[in-house]
Amino acid sequence: MTQQSRMTDREALQADRRKKMMIRRAVAESRLNIRDVCTLIVTATIMLTILYFAATIVLPFVFALIISLLMITPMRFLHRTLRLPKPLAALTLILVMFLVVGGIATAVSVPATSWLEHTSQNIALLQEKLVFLNGPIDFLQRAYNRIISFFMTSQQFAPSGNASGHHEVTSPAFFGSWGVTVLYGTRTILVEFFTTILLLFFFLSSGDVLLRRIIEVMPHHAGRKRVQQMMAKIERNVSIYLATITVMNGLVGLLNYMQCWLLDMPNPLLWGVLAFLLNYIPIIGPLTGVVIYLFVALSSFHAVIWAFAPPLIYLLIHLIEGETITPLLLAKRFTLNPVLVISSLVFWDWMWGIGGAFLSVPMLAVLKIVCDHIDRLTPLGHLIGSSDPVSIRGLEDEAHRK
Image 1: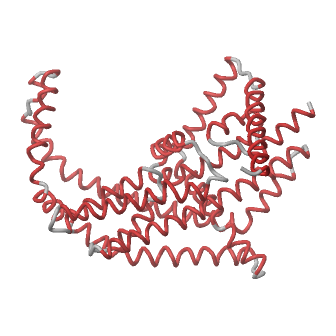
Image 2 (image 1 turned 90 degrees about the horizontal axis):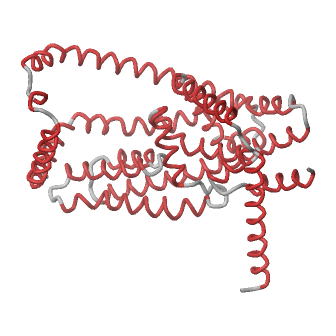
Image 3 (image 1 turned 135 degrees about the horizontal axis):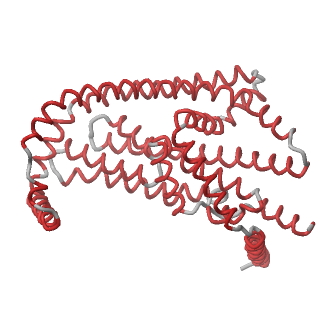
């Protein structure tokens, strides 16, 4: 080991010790009494309730903000290099996004519709191929019924005469209400989509002006500087994170498209696009993709043994990308706690559905950066991930001034 590397390791160790010391000091200084804790709990409950019931308003806002961070680099290229006015540059990017998304949607819509129309046939074919599992499934079903019957009386399980009549009467109403729900859901999705596009246009064309006005109205120079640094770091880190995972997800989709094409699976483009989209959802998305690939392969291949090849290759691609390449690319900017990542995923999926699952990791990253730049929240930022060296130096300077 050279002297320079030993000095680097020593400096890193000293920086880590200073970081932990400053975090402990921040924890010691942020003493909360019972009233503060109760106020914090009530405030958090009110905010989460508002976010839950105002999802149709808040979710397009958050989506537009995250997409604007992804487009910030091409926006600056069009505005500063090509000298396009900001509204024209924003409109150009949105039109390009429309063309790309619309082209992909058009290409996969026909095979997706065909596959959904033949779902019942595929399920029947799958049941025929998995007939050897009927014995274990029946055994588990009988065991389950015995356990239930041990705790419940037989009258509670006896079918009543009204049950059949009830189903017959409400079945048409069910399908009618299902149709109304689908129509209402489609209208809601369209409204949220166009709201997101409108907000995205104004974020791209006038977002920096709004940020500059917010910084200007702050009373103290130190506060203005800290907010400016925090917003610049959010913009840089989150945009690089989104760009990195988008490129990696594109490669995952391409590799899965190639393996489906080589293995002669039907509609390889559809399953490649599906792998690309599911990879935005940590852990749960790829696992869902493995199950879908297994189902498709079982209904497509005659030999059951060959049906395990596509999902196994899918899983191998995910392990190489998700556990090796992407963490190495993002290690210097994002070292988020895996427990909090999955907790954030589950929470925001419950809160906002599939949209919340897509936004869970970017929002967690933004929360970490904000906590790193607020003294009292620095310990929380350290729990979420590795603390920001810039914020630690800011804490040290403030401690020396005190």
